[in-house]
Amino acid sequence: MICLRGCQIRLIKTSKIYKILEIMLTSDVIYTFILICQICMGVMANSLLFIIYTYTFLIKPHLRKPIDWIFMHLTVVNISTILIRSIPELMSSFGIKDFFDDIGCQTFLYISRVIRGLSICTTFLLSVFQAITLSPSHSKWAWLKPKLSKWIFRSLLFFWVINMLIYTHIIGSVKARLNFTLVGEGYVNVYCQSRKPVAHKARSFISIILIHDIVFLALMIWSSLYMVWILYRHRRRAQHIHTSSLSSKTSSENKATYMILLLVFCFVFFYLSNNCLTLYGFYASEKNSRLEGIGGILASCYPTFCPFFLMKHNKFILRLTSFFSNMRMTFCP
Image (cartoon, rainbow, N blue to C red):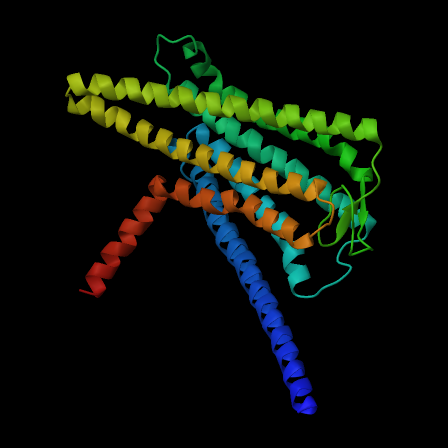
């Protein structure tokens, strides 16, 4: 009887261990699958858009618009974000250890933060550009319209310089991860961990990052609300004026504005979600590298979904889809 009870207890413990291993294996498989889907879908969609914009600029210059420069830059930033945030996590999920040394960790974190800053700056520029374009001719922003195309390249160059300068502090603040049971405050991911920071330097750096993000995020939200107000006024006027020429003239501009508003909403949502998770992981007493991985997935959601919003209103994509639909109707009646 005692032997049977002992065997039963051992079987119960073994079954529990197998269940735990099965749950862990299932979660790892799902996590890896999400990473692969993000890399494939996001990189392919953004690359397709980049090729289309490049084709328009080189082959059909009469179709290009000043805002296409921002879209092209956004696709490059999106591809960089997806690859930089997802590939280290994917390597870890496949069991690859020591993927980064100290220099690799510093390079990885520096580039990922610069790209993160460029993402918020480019989305801000896109929102402000469309708000000024949509503003009425009698508004106080009308004088900026003729200068927009000249300022795009300068603005993008300024964003690169300012973000590269801000994040130089990161270069010496991280090292390769050796201890996998870290306790205490600090940055950590599957391969890297932060060095022990100097208190006043850490506070100054965090203050600069917060000011940078809050300023651009506030201006982005302000410009989006300004566009919503303009669209609301336009709709109220359209209820009294029913002219087909006016509606056809403004419909394309309104569609572009709705698309940009949707992009801004998605960016703000995923940005705040990722930041909340990052702050929790930074100040948590016990570190969980998978938490950083989930934060990476959230950070890659916006660049993954972004090209599909842009494709919806891209004339070249619309022509391709109508061409293939006509071909399918012709050969497969």
